Image 1 (cartoon, rainbow, N blue to C red):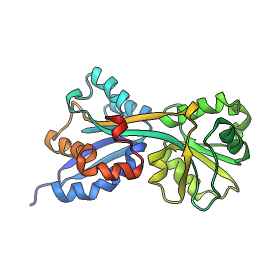
Image 2 (image 1 turned 180 degrees about the vertical axis):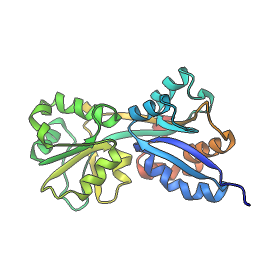
Image 3 (image 1 turned 60 degrees about the horizontal axis):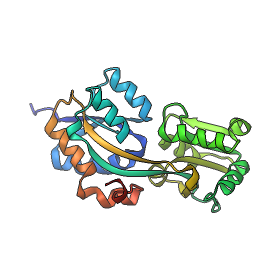
Length: 240
């Protein structure tokens, strides 16, 4: 009887979902191991780890990794930075270009939208921030009936792509926009509302196979994936 296939378990923020999925096949070919885990909002993943969910590698915001390391749940010495990701505005691939580069342009675009797609405003990094932007623009309560919120940005972008709305708009981290078929980036949030989040990966203190887990982190954050990360929307140099 052959030995069971080794498994590396992960909890991964939506901003890095496209990257991890792109590396899954090459990692399996190189190591013989399969990846098993789930994607979600950073707050939800923190809750999952605290609740005892099995995990070898955590891929979330650098700030969250530092917090979890201080609490003894992650190995601080294993932390590796993937890059910085900005938050942006998305439209469907076939829709007209949209100006969002100033607060005035963004406000006009939001008022013209009949549906606004974004991630969980309570637990997702981009969702929390975008809800705050809507309040700063004085539009949160006015447009609340048009909100379509989802557990993470990747799901929000898939729903935006599939929606039948006449003039929808979406907001999430740029990597989630770039990795989703059927949507495209209209532009980053205006400088006044900018959110640039550094993402990183680290071992959990409960990692079952540390050697394989370290190899996954190297695949995600090493030089071999640099161009893939840049193409997806990670700003590597800015996060150095």
